[in-house]
Length: 66
Image 1 (cartoon, rainbow, N blue to C red):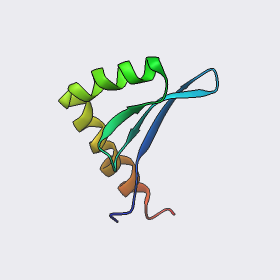
Image 2: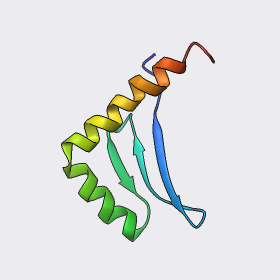
Image 3: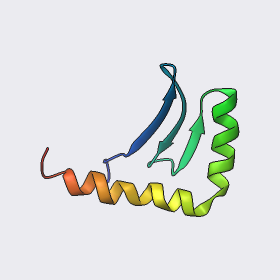
Image 4: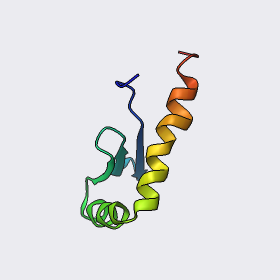
Protein backbone atom coordinates (compact mmCIF):
# COMPACT_ATOMS: atom_id res chain seq x y z
CA UNK A 1 0.00 0.00 0.00
CA UNK A 2 3.01 2.31 0.13
CA UNK A 3 2.94 2.83 -3.62
CA UNK A 4 -0.49 4.50 -3.52
CA UNK A 5 -0.29 8.16 -4.38
CA UNK A 6 -2.87 10.93 -3.90
CA UNK A 7 -2.56 13.83 -6.33
CA UNK A 8 -4.76 16.90 -6.35
CA UNK A 9 -4.24 19.11 -9.37
CA UNK A 10 -5.75 22.56 -9.69
CA UNK A 11 -6.18 23.80 -13.23
CA UNK A 12 -7.40 26.96 -14.86
CA UNK A 13 -7.94 27.42 -18.59
CA UNK A 14 -6.68 23.86 -19.25
CA UNK A 15 -3.36 24.59 -17.53
CA UNK A 16 -2.26 22.99 -14.29
CA UNK A 17 -0.87 25.65 -12.00
CA UNK A 18 -0.58 23.86 -8.66
CA UNK A 19 -0.51 20.24 -7.47
CA UNK A 20 -0.44 18.44 -4.14
CA UNK A 21 1.49 15.17 -4.25
CA UNK A 22 1.18 12.84 -1.26
CA UNK A 23 4.59 11.28 -1.97
CA UNK A 24 6.26 14.69 -1.69
CA UNK A 25 3.91 15.84 1.08
CA UNK A 26 3.72 19.37 -0.26
CA UNK A 27 2.25 21.59 -2.94
CA UNK A 28 4.21 22.24 -6.12
CA UNK A 29 3.58 25.24 -8.37
CA UNK A 30 3.94 25.11 -12.15
CA UNK A 31 3.28 28.75 -13.03
CA UNK A 32 4.28 32.01 -11.37
CA UNK A 33 0.85 32.20 -9.75
CA UNK A 34 1.05 28.53 -8.73
CA UNK A 35 4.50 28.89 -7.16
CA UNK A 36 3.30 31.80 -5.00
CA UNK A 37 0.25 29.83 -3.86
CA UNK A 38 2.31 26.69 -3.25
CA UNK A 39 4.64 28.64 -0.96
CA UNK A 40 1.66 30.03 0.94
CA UNK A 41 -0.08 26.64 1.24
CA UNK A 42 3.09 24.82 2.27
CA UNK A 43 3.43 27.16 5.27
CA UNK A 44 -0.06 26.18 6.47
CA UNK A 45 0.52 22.97 8.43
CA UNK A 46 -3.20 22.32 8.86
CA UNK A 47 -3.69 22.41 5.07
CA UNK A 48 -0.80 19.98 4.55
CA UNK A 49 -2.16 17.63 7.23
CA UNK A 50 -5.63 17.74 5.66
CA UNK A 51 -4.26 16.87 2.23
CA UNK A 52 -2.15 14.03 3.64
CA UNK A 53 -5.27 12.68 5.37
CA UNK A 54 -7.01 12.56 1.99
CA UNK A 55 -4.71 9.71 0.97
CA UNK A 56 -6.05 7.55 3.79
CA UNK A 57 -9.63 8.76 3.43
CA UNK A 58 -9.92 8.49 -0.33
CA UNK A 59 -7.22 6.20 -1.74
CA UNK A 60 -7.02 3.51 0.92
CA UNK A 61 -10.78 3.43 1.30
CA UNK A 62 -11.28 2.72 -2.42
CA UNK A 63 -8.38 0.30 -2.96
CA UNK A 64 -10.65 -2.73 -2.62
CA UNK A 65 -12.78 -1.48 -5.51
CA UNK A 66 -9.84 -1.51 -7.88
